[in-house]
Amino acid sequence: MKLTLARKPFAMPQRLLTAGLLCIALTNQVAAADTAQLMADGEVPGLAVAAIHNGRVDVFNFGVRDIRTGALVDDQTVFEAASLGKPIFAYVVLQLVDAGTLSLDQKVADILPDPVPGDPRAGKITVREILSHTSGLPNWRHGRLRTYFDPGTRFSYSGEGFVLLQRAVEKITGQTLEAIAKRLVFEPLGMHSTSYVWQEAFEGDYAVPHDIGSRPGIRKRISEALSASSLQTTAADYARFLQAVLAGERLTPETAKMWLSPVNNVPQGCRPECLRATAPELNPRVAWGLGWGLEPTDGTFFQWGDNGTFMAYAAGSITDQSAVVVFANSANGQSIMPDLVAARMSGMQPSFAWLSYEHFDTARRRLLRNGTARGIEAAWAEGATAAALSEADRRSLARDLFQGDRPNDALWLQERNAVDFPNSSTVFKELGRTLLALGRPKEALVQFRQAVELNPGDQEARRLAEKLEGGTPAKP
Image (cartoon, rainbow, N blue to C red; front, side, top):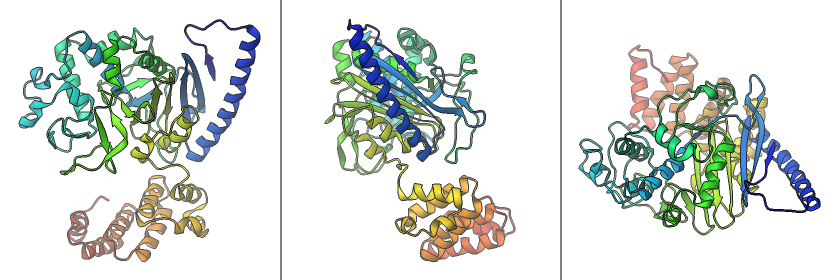
């Protein structure tokens, strides 16, 4: 744990300063104990947290960056920040707007002719629409890239939009994303351990990703800079960026205010990508500005990050002059994020309800932990927790058991699901896939046939059944 005083500390009598630091230290000890328990409950190996209050930055490190070696997370540990790179890229763009290099209402097609080949509607997309996620582009392309609705008409979160704007910025400036971010953000703010691409300097101290079963993976050495997803940084470095956001540094007052002003509200029950043909009902408490998510009734801004096995979250309040950023080297990271942020930020954080990540303390997650520790049949015998689960919860629990290297437990639960939900084609298809993965194709074929009988339109189950009937090896 490291405590860092504000860059410009005010004068305080030594007696009061000592008492204040003692109070902070005691508070931090309690917070550390609570965080350690959260990490154990959520099965998160390592965390880095930076909290800002009235110019003061406190950085806290918890757990390990690699469960195999036991190497501890420290102030220099580099994490994948995922989508937390989007606000930094927006900061680059807004500085270019202030400099007159770009205009918010400029069409990307003015810089990149035919930005999405074969899609005339994409020619209307503006810089403002990309930053506010109203471009009509998907989060990530499904086959050929295209727009799904008229740009500017509604919200749908889009990583593809940010990458498109990145290409435009690179063309108009003649610099790579990494070079321009270094010039306009990393160097001026002293973010010396931050990059959109892998740096050799990261080799000595980087966080290793861990899956839902806390199994370590391989740290990606990202070579392609992507404004939407490839940022790598430390908690201390990202806190420097958050300080700049709170102060409105390097932006005109008008632009700094506009950055954090709502452009549109996000949809209810459709997140973060929302490509439906009909516009859904809007969420009154969550909106989007020009690169930040906003909670207007709470006066806060936010952005979350999810690269699968790395999770992150940042939030701040201009009014309170406070902010927090959390990095986790685990696929389970978002399950404890609301508790971590609530302990360090005031307000209700309605963004968490919109994001809808499963909390670590749900009945399903408790049963997953117990089933992993003692076997699902023994855990199931407790009864009360199991009875609270829906079909969808039970199916996802079986998938998590299988992915957590508990195939026999997954099979036991899926066989029980088939008894309890005899009219669900999906239950039988998933049972068939597990049997197939366990090398039992004849039994798998029976399940795929049952899935097709229940739902003749299930093309996946039909394809797998036909392959097995023809003697062709099939993959689950």
